[in-house]
Each structure stands twice: as C-alpha cells, then as structure tokens.
Length: 516
Image (cartoon, rainbow, N blue to C red; front, side, top):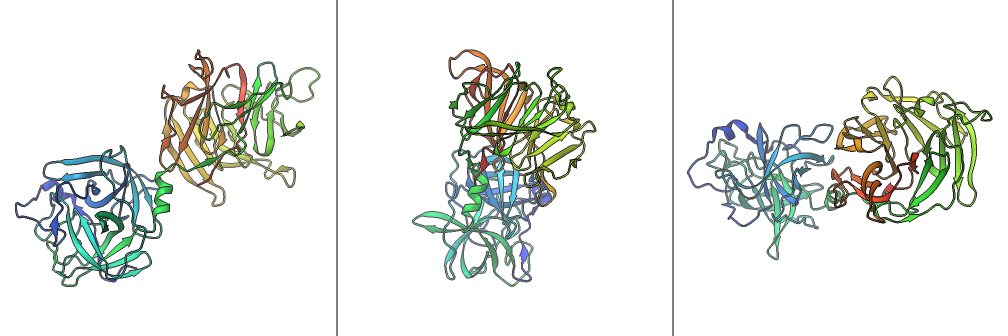
C-alpha cells in the first residue's frame, strides 16, 4: 500500500512542454540534489506523450522500465497514447539523446511497474543492470528523473539526489532525504539505484511522494515511496527474450501427393530451422486426394474426396486415422459428413488443427468454429461445433500454432495472430499484426510452438543451390514481437526444396511447445 496522503508522481503537463517554459536559473535535482553530469547515467529515460512526460530506465537496448501510471496500455498492449522515449545524454533544450517510439507495454499486475518496448534498439547506449538484493533500511539510494525541480517546470537535463531507505514493505520501499528533497511531478518511473563498485544497480522506481520542495507545491511533509524491481529479473527476461521452444521428437510432416499417395517425413530441426530430415522411403497409403490435416498423438484427419465407383465414401466425409510407429496408419472410420466445402480452392486453407486436436474452421457465414474430439468417449464433444467468433470471411487462410493460437492471413498477405483461452472462454489476443507478404505461400502449416512452415514460394535449394520451389521455416516470439533470424534472402529460413506438387502438406500440431 502507498502511504496515505502521498501523491502519485503524475507527469508534467503537455501544456508546459509545448509552452517551452524553461528558465535560465540553474536547476537543482528533483526538489534538490544535482544535475546529472553529461556522460554519466545514460540509462536515464525521458518518456513523453501528447499529454504528459515522466521518467524511466533503459534495462535492455529495446526495453525500458517505468511506472504503470506513466504508461497505461490498451487491451492489445499498445500505449494508450502515442509515446516516445529519449535515452543517453538527453537534453530537452537541444534535442540531444537517442529517441524512439514506444510500441508495446507489459504491465505487472502486483505493483506500479511496466516494461515498454522501443520500436528500434538504443544501440550503443549503456543499460542499467538490475540489482539482485532488496534495499535495506538505512541504505543510501540514488534517485533520478526528469521531473520538475524547485525552480523549473521542465528541466533540460535529469537530476539525481541521495535518499535513505527508511523501510521495506513487500513490493515497496519508503525513502527520505536528510535535506527534505522529494521526487516531483515528471519523476514517476525514474530509477532508484545503488552504486556498488562504481556500478549503478537498479532496485526500484519512483511511485509516490509528498513532493516537498517541488515548484508550486506547499506541502510540508516529506518522503516518498519507490516500487521494488530488484526481484523482477525472471519476469523481465521472460518478456524481453524469446520464449524457449521444445520439439523433443522433431516434427512429423505429412505430404499428400497428386497421385493420392501419403508420405511421412520428420523435420529434425523445427525449433531452430535446421536443415535436417528423416526421409520417407515409401508411402503410408493411397487414395489421399482430399484434404489432409494432422492432429495430436498421431491422429490424421481426412476430409475425403470420392475416388472411384468402388469407393463407398462421398466427397466431404470426415475420416479419422491414427499413426503409430511400427504399425503405420490404422482406423479410418467415418466420424463426420458434409465437410466438402474444405475440398474447394476457396476454403481449403480455412481449416486447421491445434495441439489439443481442436479442428478450427471458417464456415460459409464467416464464423470461426471449432470441433473437439473426446478421446475418452471416442466422439465429438459437440457434434454441431462451437462458434468462437464472427467476421472471419476477411481471412483466406488460418493456421493453428499452439493451444488456441491462430495465425490468420488476409488475401493481401497481411498476417495476424490470435489466442483464445478456452479455460476463461475469452480471447487474450485479437488481430495482432504479425507480418506481411504471406500471400506468396500456397499453404501455411505449423508443428506448434509459434513455428510456421510456408510452401509454394521460390528460392534457393539448401541442397543443390538451384532456384525453384522451396519450403520455408519461421518462428514468431509473441512476447518480443520478433521473428527468428531469417536467411540471407530475408524470407525465412529455407529448409527444403520441391514441395510444390503436393495436394496438401500438414505437420503434427503437438510436435513443439513453448517451454518458458
């Protein structure tokens, strides 16, 4: 809890920023202290939106830590207002410093802290490392920020002052200054750091203060509250480093060829896009001229296409097969009918299967539906399917890449990521832009773990160097909004050649899982 009566360090007014009310009077840090010397503490960050400004700390070339009150976010994780950040030797009066836009905000739910992502890395600007031990009562911390001072509304340079820790209470730290210095408006999110061996270590962020001694403040009480961050190292790493993925047995990939034969390959490098395969020496069956979809635990769904006069199954019959090592494919009984829409060119890519064996589809009304198979009963949980959403006719392809994770492509090639939480019966992500140019692929499929394969484009074979149809590998990290390193043509990693004569290619969707 914040001490009752202390004021949150809400940011400087945009009116003051626009008015340029800078004074020639030498400024003091916060409501006291000193101006940060040029060349020291380049990790100090100044954050500005159209309505306010506040402070923060650069903890990674692409990420800053600041106060949640400084940067509220929308449900999609974007800043509520357009926001920019300046780091390095920032000087408001000259425009000095490295500047970038802030594109993503990750909120801590248990304290006044957010991580914010820069749209370009602050390469060459030193970051501040995180302290690994909690502040102790009686310890001296340095508190810095770009907030107002005793004499200035908008100081040109950041200020720093010494504070003494008077108490530590869970996620907060109480601080005070012997000479009555306090943090002021605009210092919200500014770093509180200890200096050990000449190195600054971030342990907290400014949150609330009596603002004693600040310009236009008459409060006589003193002291402030900092929000601890020394114990957030693991959380920060999970946000700024791509989540690890595990594919313990590789990714089985099934290819249905134009002659109706079905072939099983295993990509041995799905986690990192390595060109390593187990090749098939013979097909696993014939008559696979319909729509093939791999499921979990070796399940293969066949939207059957009628083959001959002796074939008892009409177009659109859904059949369920199971593959086991050593025995091959078994089963093949009918488990549905009327699925012939997904044999057409218009709908063939509007159906996919996730790692839980949910079959997702876009129907003729533009609804996103799913069907879930119950292994215990040997039948569908709901034979009519469940509607998750509407308005999906705008997409010409969907690909499941995890538990409830869907990548949806528009005809123009724009790709969007969605995630549905089935336990909460709610979307946790909708329409998140994930790239463009995906119209070059005739088919996009996934082994899970936010890994995508695309076939149907042209490139250089990794085997003989010839130009022709290739299979490309991609891996997206949702937490960092980045794709895995791509090949020299910047078009994903080419992991195979050919793959252009197949009717359909599909990967077992439970092959890879996020492990972070």
